[in-house]
Structures are given as structure tokens and as C-alpha cells.
Length: 430
Image (cartoon, rainbow, N blue to C red; front, side, top):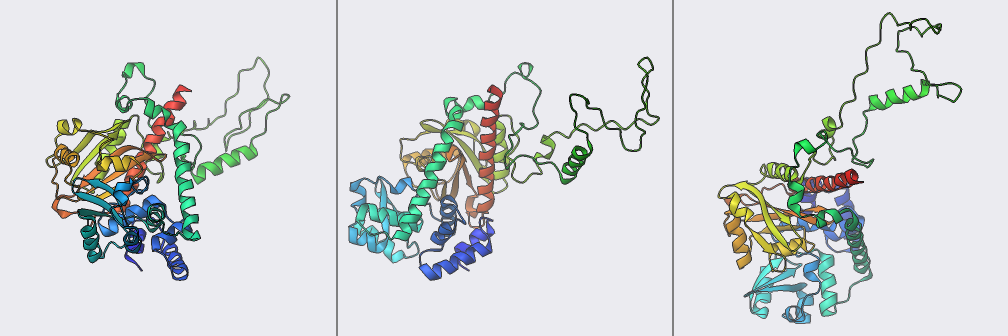
């Protein structure tokens, strides 16, 4: 089995049967394994890009990186060379060109591209479908019906996700992020919630099998009240039914009163045992702290950044050399060409060493890091829109042994918790 297939199975993103089906499809139709998995619906484009970045140890070029590339940049490569090398330059920074290449392991090809462009190249991975899309758009390469069909489906999925997020996230973007973190005065609040009462969704806490059976038996034996026959409580098991009595007679009591029913267990008590439930939290600060705690099991240094309207700001973090005040003072405008701009613009994951641009130097100083250290930046999204960016590194150890699947699941659960927080505020205001 391929390295990519093993990585995806180990991360829990696909099953071995799905990979085997994709390999059979690859034998029949050709193309890359990732393309076949996308066609089968076994994996999302985001998951594929993250896995490729992990497998090859390189940053991933995102969809937005390969769209609307200025002519002065994509013309750095002649059309015949770009098509034959399956390479697309998409960004220029000082004396360095970011370039997406399909054949990552061909070092001789990299040298040839750097010689033709006349600058240092920073190689990025991209999935086969997006490389072909860019080659068609900028260099006139023909794209077969197979890839055009897959591109249409992927773009439709992205558009649907973006459209559905606008209404539900309106309050998040109309309210400054720190306001969500402010603890209101306890004297002005109602009773503290262990966990918000959630709507009936696939993530709702379900009754246990015993509870469902008990309720079903009760419904079957309970007589339905009518206008002529008012409802009366059913006697407990083992007790005699109440006897008719005169109006003036005192009510008769059973010799052994039934044990009073136990109060229902609060929903919050079961939340931690439900595998798909989001973290219970009353504000964004709590979600950030929980994410920080869990990411610290995988990294030696962790930092979280808040995504604002036009910038990314430092929030909370921990690790060797990281100072809270310095991190809080960090702010990067989204109009600047930095890793944050790429991630907020539609990217989901960055893996590798940060380039030596001034913006990245400020970032490294803010977290007390080392420019030569491999790092990971992952987006916490709510309905496809980034709200937090998580940074992590493991010092000199590097990211070779990192469990990327576990990190992906943590950021996904943090996004679910953010979404529940927003929906709960809407329900309280309704």
C-alpha cells in the first residue's frame, strides 16, 4: 500500500477498504491516489491537502493561492515548461518564488525551475486536480472531462459550505471576538449551565437503551387521558390500586409508598462520554484553554491566534520561551503576504519552516521560537470560516512523529464548540 494510503488509514480519515477501492480505480483510470479518493467521496479536499503536507513535509498551496495569479507571476515560467513540469508559480516574496509542483521528489526538476525563473523557489504541494485546473487557466493545457467533473463538484461543495455559514456566523463577526470571552457579572446571570440544551441533531445526547425502553413501556401501558376521563397516575409496581373513597374521607395511602423517582441526570454529565459532542463551554476563552491543553500533549510550544475582520491577533499560548504579553501584543494585517493570509483566505494547514519574510520574523519573535524549527499551523473553522489559528512546534524533534490525525480532530472539535457557543447565544436571544 502507498505511503499516502497508510498515512490516511493511520490518521483515521479513511478505511483500508476505501484505499483499496481507490487503488483499483487508479489501476483502471490512472491519476493520483488522492484524486481517486476524492472521486469516491472517501476524503475531503482539505483532508487530502493536510495528508499530502504531512507525507511530504512541505506546505500546501491552497485553492485561493492558485486562483487569480497575476500575469507577471505565472509568466515567470513559459507555458511549455509549466505544462511539462506540471508546476505553477503563484507568489513572489523578495527573491523567493512560491511554486506548486506535482512531482515533489524530483530534485533535478526543482533545480531546472529555479534556473529558468532566476530566483530561489519555495516548493509547495498541491493536489493533482488543482494543479490541472491552474495549468488549464494560465497555460492553456487541456483538462479531461474526468477532472473537469471533479472540479465542478469540489467547487460546488466549497460554495455550499460558504453560503450556509453566513447566517449562522453573523453574530460572531458583528461582535468583537474578545466580547465572547468576557465573563458577565455572576449576579446578573441565570443559573450556570453545565452544557447548553442542544437542538435535536446528530450530535445531540441520546437516551440510553434502558431509558428508551422504559419510556416505551410507560407509553404503552399509560391510558391516554380524554375530556371525559382525566389522566391519573399509574400505581407503582407491587402496590395496590387506590380504592374509591367518599368525598369527606381522608385520602388513603398505600402501606408501602413507592420510592420517589430520581431526578433526571443533567445532560452535561454525559457530554464527555459522547464521542462526537463538542466541548462544553460558556465562552470562547474556555474553548481556547481546552484546545491549548489538548494540543500541549502533542507539541512543546503552542499558541492560538484570533481571526478578526482584517487581522490576526495573538491570544493565548504556552511553552519554552513564550511570553504571554508578547503574544498578546502580536497583530498581523490580512493584507500582508504571510502564512496567516493564506490560511484565512481558504487554506487549512501549513506544515514546514516559515520563510524569512519580515512578517514571519515578527511571528517567530512573538512566540519565542526558532526560524529553523518545523511548525504546524491549523485553522479552527466554523462552517468553513476560520475563527482561530493554532500554532504548534516540537523544537528540535521536528514533526516527523506527530499524529496529524489527532491534531485535526482537536481543531475540528474546537470548531464544533465555537459553533455551539454561537447557536446558544442565538437561542437565548430568541
